[in-house]
Amino acid sequence: MKALRFYAPEDVRLEEVPEPECGPDEVKLRVRNCSTCGTDVKILHNGHQNLTPPRITGHEVAGEVVEVGGDVNSTYGSDWAVGDRVQVIAAVPCGECHECRKGWMAVCANQTSVGYQYDGGFAEFMIVPKQVLKVDGLNRIPDNVGFDEASAAEPFACAINAQELLDIEPGDTVVVFGAGPIGCMHIRIARGVHQAGPVYLVDVNAERLQMSADAVSPDEVINGAEVDVVERVMELTGGRGADVIITATSANVTQEQAISMAARNGRISFFGGLPKTNPTITCDSNVVHYRQLHIHGANGSAPEHNKKALEYISTGQVPVKDLITRHIPLDEVLSAFDIVQAGEAIKVTVEP
Image (cartoon, rainbow, N blue to C red; front, side, top):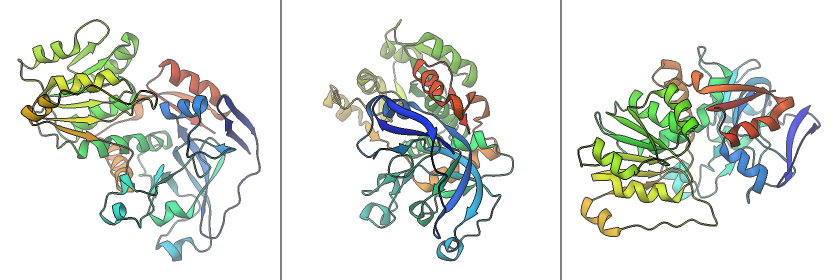
């Protein structure tokens, strides 16, 4: 079969590899869609400490079951069958550590990941390992949801995890930094699930701002390259500040701006991780103290968040179909990374 394999930074090859065999406690998929994200581009250029080469990458996966291991249904109490349409979690909790037992699977101490420790979805076929099945991480796709939409459920699940920590209330003013696909999803979840009030989208790339604004219609777009973002948010909120700020970018300054623009009792999500070479910010602790701010990290998702994402897509609460603006065949998968890196599409999906 054809698959994209990572060997080393800048050494990623689309090549013919043996089709994987399905073990007794595994499920084999025909991959229909594997969507891309900024993390895939980072892996291409820098690798990842948890990725052991050669490895088939790709972690936003939806496909069709072509084989079910003989022990799967009896072991996991499932009823998987050939032909089932499924979505696969990316972050795989162990289910046994202190965090998992507390119900905090998104921060499992022993987490592994599809496309890192296990071969991923930039391939014609993929094995769903027992570690995924053990934590109920293979999800049935609702009949009215396409494979491409289902592949977007994984990043969507990460946004759901972040917003559950923020307690967004109806009418809250929300600021989202980052006009990429995840920023668009954050806006739609804040409105469609939590009934947020005005939502403002911030970026420094005018073209990206326009593309995302056309899709999700924020109440205002703020170009951080042209105006003082904090000053503008204060103007828009009558000097009170934003109730909720989500930094869906890897720019240090956005986290500092988030603290400065937060209203009293404001909630902030540091959703985008910062570069490992520059992971610190300047924080006025007195602002946090006197305004009684709540600053949350948000990393990945739990299996339950993937199920919620599929439900929200199916019910129409949070549409994603129109956010998938490019469909790329597996033969051209490397061009998908170029498109993501250049910001020429909202969401790019690869179709083996």
